[in-house]
Length: 257
Ligand SMILES: CCCCCCCC(=O)SCCNC(=O)CCNC(=O)[C@H](O)C(C)(C)COP(=O)(O)OP(=O)(O)OC[C@H]1O[C@@H](n2cnc3c(N)ncnc32)[C@H](O)[C@@H]1OP(=O)(O)O
Image (cartoon, rainbow, N blue to C red; front, side):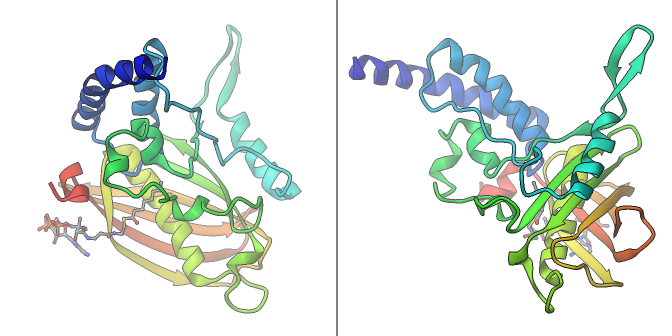
């Protein structure tokens, strides 16, 4: 039984691999969870057909959980409501879209076949590597493709302390890189951060909720310029401002081929 199963898997591997390679070359998958996810989805259909043994449903880390405070939930509810607008013909898609967030996009993009040989099996996305809810980065990104911008509700956990009682500047930079990078990747495919310029205007208290507003500034050939503002949820207080430059890359740049 086990041998038969392994034979089926081996027969299937080239097909699966080719499918993923196609997805990579056609759509250009970088660190955009959106794109990785769609490759995973297209591959998953096939995996079901052939009883692919390594296919699992990834956990979406940006779903509400018990660590979220009321303010975090409020921002989530606000943008989530904009994902579907009510019309006379019934509900249809709104201008916003909630992006899923996984702790290891590469694994789920490939079914753990091809890239797991290159990336160590224990690798995890920096912002999603603590299992305890609410301890570090609690965040959810909503994308508005039409307006080429996104927002992120971020609740900063107690393990992100920098100055006493406040969030570490590196943790803020991490969130800015993540959100601006998600926007750039969503709009342009595979990218890498070339430059991140940050002005810290006012400290962010630990445990508080802030919103990152990120927008495409312009593109120039391979260069994607993105802005980011970190504010209180009512936008009355500016915490941080940043500009970021991303460069479009191909997969060979990441894997040295
Ligand atoms: C799910 C979460 C998403 C999170 C997204 C997070 C993304 C990341 O954090 S990536 C990790 C951090 N970044 C890195 O490690 C990148 C390391 N650097 C590199 O790999 C390369 O230098 C890279 C890709 C940035 C640029 O590649 P390179 O081959 O040098 O590009 P190149 O073709 O020479 O330059 C393209 C243009 O960009 C410009 N450019 C390149 N780097 C920079 C820079 N640092 N500053 C300003 N301009 C730059 C060049 O001058 C050139 O401009 P022009 O076309 O006008 O002449």
